[in-house]
Amino acid sequence: MNADDASTLDGLTTEASNPTGGPGIDQLSVADLVALMNARDATIADAVRSALPAIAAAVTAATERMREGGRLIYVGAGTSGRLGVLDASEVPPTFGVEDVVVGVMAGGPAALLDAAEGVEDDSEAGAADLAALGIGPLDTVVGIASSGRTPYVLGAVEHAAAAGALTVGLSCNLGSPLARVASHGIEVPVGAEIVSGSTRLGAGTATKMVLNMFSTATMVQLGRTYGSLMVDMRASNAKLRHRAVRIVTEATGVDAAAATAALDAAGWHAKLAIATLLTGLSPAEASLALDRAGGRLRTVLEERG
Image (cartoon, rainbow, N blue to C red; front, side, top):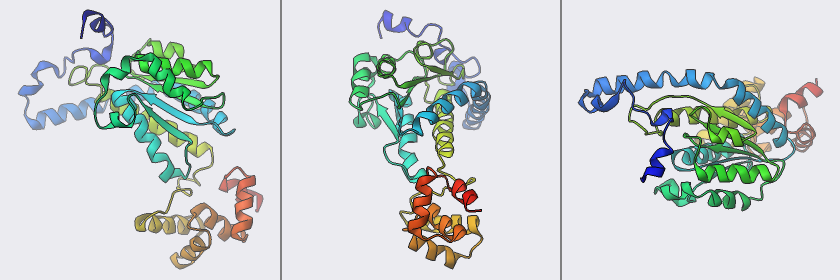
C-alpha cells in the first residue's frame, strides 16, 4: 500500500483500531475471545436498526420496478461481492425465480474462491461488468462496499444510474461517496472491527443482515410467500418434497396423503397445489388464476371467496 492508498482509509470507522479488542486480543483465552466477539456482534443489529428507514425506502422503490419485470442486481468486491453473490444464489431455491436477483463479483466467479483484490480498484471494470448485463430503467443495482468508496463498485453504480436504473449504495461508514452517487444510500455504522480493518467481521454481518432484508422483503411483496410459507420453493430433493407436503398441509388443513396427491398433480409446485385444494380449480385453471393475480396466492383465494 502506498501513501495515496493509505490516505483513502483516513476517517473510516471500519478501519479504526478497536479499543475493546486492540492488539491485546492475541493474549486472550479462547473463552474470552469468543465472548468478546459475541458481545461485539450483539451491537450489529442496533446499527442495522438505525438504517431501517433507508432500507425500507430502497426496498419499496426496488419492488415497484421488479413488479414490471426488473431485476435486483448486487455488485461488490471482496467480502461484499461474495455476500451479494451468496444472497442472489439462495433466491431461486427459496422463492422459485430465475435470473431475477443477480450477484456480480469483481474478478468474476473465480474471485469467489481466490481473492482478486486488485480488481476492486478498477472503476471501468465495474462499469463494464454492469454494461454486460444490459442494465435498464426497470433494474435496481445495489452497490455493496463496507468502506463506501470502492472504485469498482462506484463505477458500476455510476454506469447503472446513467442507464436509468434505480441505484442503492450499501456501506458501513457514514458520509460515503457510495451513498452520494446512489439514489438510495444505506449506511450502517458498525464501528471498528475486533481485528482492525477486517470487514468480513462486523461489517460482513451487517451486510448479510441488510441483504437478507432486501431479497426477502422484495420477494414477499411480489407474492412469493403465503403468510410465512415458502410456497414457491423448489421441491428438488427428498427433504424439500417433505417440506412441500408440510407447507400444503399447513396452508390447507388436508392430511399428508391429500397434500402429496395435490402436489403430484401440480408438478410439486406448492402454491399451485394449495390453490387447487382451496378453490376446487384444476391445476390448469388455478395456474391461469395465479398468472392473472401476478402470482399472489392470497389474491386468488380472496377472489374465490
